[in-house]
Image 1 (spheres, rainbow, N blue to C red):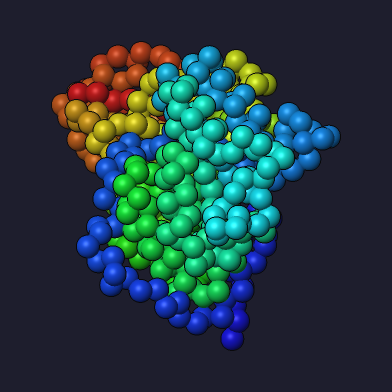
Image 2: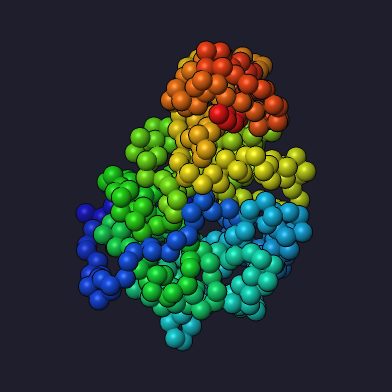
Length: 421
């Protein structure tokens, strides 16, 4: 019986006939999967999808269509406006960059009108700026927007990306013909990328598409992918951010332990600097993406971003938590009276703690927590120095283990702290 697998926000479907895919792995057993040494801290950069989607109309909207002009402009701004220096060094193309058909040799090719110089030229330009280029493809027969998929062409596509100088592949999961082909396709592409000899970060959507049918095997996923999407596409709305955080709390026992250097859970793009979030909600996304050790892939218009949003996204203290080399993902450990408390262990015995107000009514909510309960009882034993990082930086000073920490959290907002022994 055929089943339907929900796609990305275009809501295209993948017909699943549940017939096995005859992938022959024995010829490549000598290659270790994802032995790439990449993404030792969460990937940071810019990705076009949420903000610019699949805009192909370069005649009417030349500044917003998916074209080499858009990516070259973003590359320039990533350097001139301090994004690269803050750590955002991957410039990533999502869906809709391709021509409708492969070339005469079966290779993917960029749309000749929108990318007249080709992807290799764009990669060279991006590299000249000290940045890295990410690209998009799909494990199935077509991409989510209907462009050529990689099914049956994994080797040639991996080599094409390597020849172009691509540094990251986002591999989507639309239009597969079976669950088996979905899983084997993700595994095969990891091997194919490795065999090119080029260092290419591998971003998967494997568990997102698998979970409607059976529980993902995160040991497998961690082995093959540098990071992976678990839940729906993010939208420029508070409801979307709340849904992602709620899902993460429900499934955190399953996903937190598999995260670490080289393999990360990906709750999707940062939409800070767009239209749908209040200031406090933007603070919440930045704070909790840091706690979750999430890839920080912005999707916004760097040509129009406000100074406030820019300062939040470039906050060095918050980025330091996200990029902490210990590589442990944080978790929610308390929920009471419309408050969630999250924490994350950091290197040098430090901890990050986030207090989130779930209410969307009234004024700032006062909250008091025992210092002895933080960091599994270890963060401040016998004492620690506490600094509030968000929504603004405040040095709170030395706290003994027996004291309490008092704060006030705005509706839908979050206060982020760093605790150091």
